[in-house]
Image 1 (cartoon, helix red, strand yellow):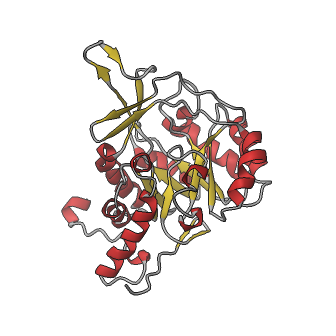
Image 2 (cartoon, rainbow, N blue to C red):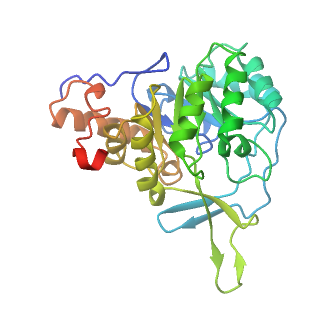
Amino acid sequence: MKKIDTNVSLAGIALKNPVMTASGACGYGLELVPFFDLSRLGALVVKGLSVRPRPGNPPPRIVETCGGMLNAIGLENIGLEAFVVETLPRLREHRAVVLVNILGESQEEYGTLVERLSREEDIHGFEVNVSCPNVQRGGITFGSDPDMLEPLVRFLRDKTERPLIIKLSPNVTDIVDMARRAEAGGADALTLINTIRGMSVDAESRRPDLATVVGGLSGPAIKPVALRMVWEVASQVRIPVIGAGGIVSAEDAVEFLISGASALQVGTANFRNPNACIEIIEGIEAYLDRHGMNSVGELIGSLEVAQTAAS
């Protein structure tokens, strides 16, 4: 195989390839250390972090479904100080590009996280979670109302010079409008999509499979929705889009890149195959070589669409 340039510049962050972990799918990334060198990733997106520790929702909070899984973890995490004192030093040892997913119930909580984490070295940017469907309170309020989203992004923009990536919810009327408003507020990039609201029922007991009844659907079942939204948004904003939702193979990843994603995240696939990210990285390189391409940049946004379909 010839040498393929897989480097991507994302909101000023130099990535050696476009493949990231998705927040929440592999904890703080240290869980993957037994399987591969974390520095091989384009970036590691850690589990969502709040100012104070959160216990999350009661079990059962994960259930397998046809083509994916439902989760209602409820943003369980160790909290800001434990992450800075205990986890971040261990992540530094692995020389990975680290993006911290942050969440809050108010502008002030988001602001506290950004200000505190901006004082730490080796945090390359923030992914702002405004789209979790599994909690009764929190960022979903910002992610479902464009008139709240834009001021939040503007507020955070004033608190850090590091890249701000806004993770958008598919559970909205107009994803393009939300993307534009995030961009107007000063976002450097967008991640889409987060999970889709769904539920599962045990027919024998006539009870819901999740303690919260409703959870977030992820995995291959949501890929067509994610792919469509990435294509719609990438053509309407000037900032890069990170595609997420149902990526389990290199072919899936290539489809997102072709549709306009500048990078991508792998989530649910890690539960089945901890080496999924590495296999996808290698698969993208093989695809580029097979098609006579020298760089991943030639692939991004290369979808050929008939004029009638695009209009």
